[in-house]
Length: 300
Image (cartoon, rainbow, N blue to C red; front, side):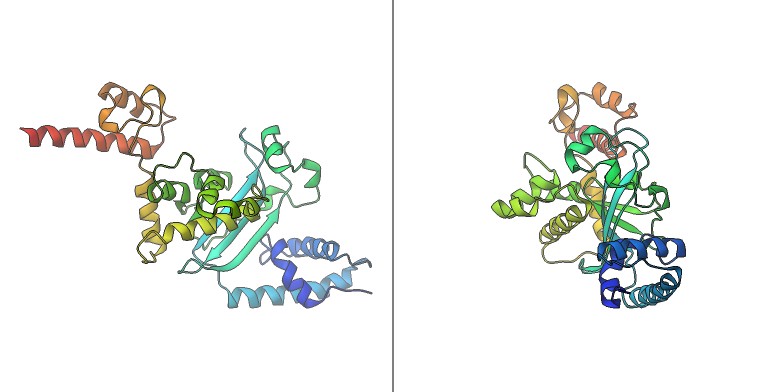
């Protein structure tokens, strides 16, 4: 009988490690998936599974001890689209050291058990039947020891993953502050801006979670390079992100593109009452009213 070598298991286990350390049933599923990926011809018996389970548990224990999960991960998801409920069918993240280098990698496909929308299909070219043999998306468990998550438009991924109690660091907001006056701040556009013609190869697999986290990691380091060679802590980077999220200009309607001070007071008051205006824009509006008061006081 041909069994996968332990080195092959080590190399492949990360690709199947959805909550493996906690659920033996998932380990059995992972063994079969790895077995198939390695093109093993013989069927894995229950006895063989038990042996492989022991190997996998040993590997997981060693990996977890040698590479503890960071409190900060950079992540991306691919989902069913924009219609609620939005279900992830691919999740990838990289765990970051304090110097923002990669310490661990996670990647998994899931069965969303919901039809993928045409718009999402046109982006990823992944169909539901491609995912039918993967574990259900409901089996995903967000790591409990993570305190910070980084991503491009990170709020979307955060909501898709159930809005865990973590601090969100948005690379789109940071890029808009440190690379001002660009005509687009999509992740792909920023990679084009930063890497020129080399971006063509880098974006070939864009809109897969694996490639997107790698590109976002490159974008993150380009942003860090703008911070005068000072590497911020995760908390400091979160504070910079929170500040960058507060827009300096109106992004809505007839006053789109105007500085807040140039937007009529009545329109700003109207925006404060709208549920679709996010908390960061509302904070900017409140700050603009405070600036109006200061201008009046000092003019007197």
